[in-house]
Length: 219
Length: 233
Image (cartoon, rainbow over all chains, first blue to last red; front, side, top):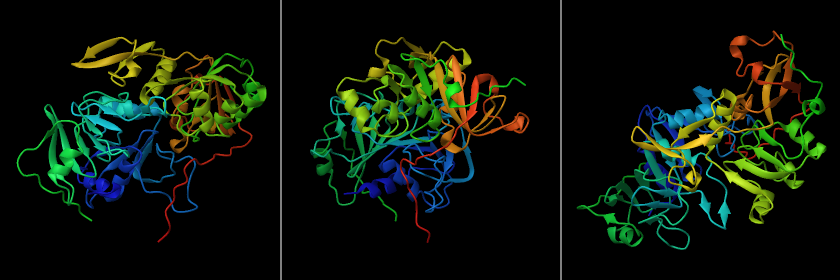
């Protein structure tokens, strides 16, 4: 079974040379730390920066340079700043190649819910609805089950939706799955996790085609 | 040169009345019009509708207006950083309209640019789309969103000149350029106000035609919401 860092490491392998990538808050943010050497990517943060770098050294933080999680950041050579309308122009106009975001629920038809639990938690959708409605290549990073042990990969989402029929791939602590017309196709198992364990943790339709390989997690 | 300068924050806020709709720039606490917000608190205007990506934090930014119950309605995309906000929302004291961030930005930009409405795919199939016209373009459903209407826009820039031209710094730019000129009266506060001619016209982000009043803010606290650093090796 993977931890959050493991999920980030596995997703980092999906990042290809020349990609512009938008990372959501949480596990997706960690992906930036594990992109293999020799792969040139630029990270976009929807508050208005392309070419995001690592956190600043102590004492060098600038309140005018933050990411969408409101964290202080730095920029790398080639970076640019822009306004919010242009930022979402990049997103809606499909100039961003890959979007990685977290979720509370994903359904087998590609629906995603990640912004609201009625009566309990209402923080808002931020840029998530714009991202999932426009991006062509979306990977969800999340734990396979919630804290109560219930599956987050469902036949249909029960929470208010963020977007419909938009998710391509899901990487969890247990598995890599592709969203297909027939359901979640199991592509890879996390180290030490059996197909049966994945089946038991998946409420939506799980398609198991032949022998399922174990993930390679590079350090 | 048309001089857009006003003496200070008091003159800049002349005409702001209770019940008005205000646009307020910034993302989190970055690039917020600190001096204008402080003056709104002082003026004590109430029943405000605020269009702003976030609602500040407890004790700073729009959190100051929330604390004094000066805001009737918030139109935002993300409000997760403010306990008082959550309390007022869950108790029903505060009306909240949550909308996708890109739609929020574009509804400002549309108001600025004289476009009454536009179609966007964001929010299709979700509760955001309820009651809105849906139309297919290139085989994909989109929803109709309308430009905002606001009485005042409060924006914050790094540098400005007497003609109202603005230059922003870093990600403090965010919603400020798209709110400039998107309301009946736009008030810009800047860290440094210089005479016309000192800013290179090639470097201007927002031309002064979008700014009605400009002043240099007395001080900027620029609070950091999430301080994240790495150690030197």
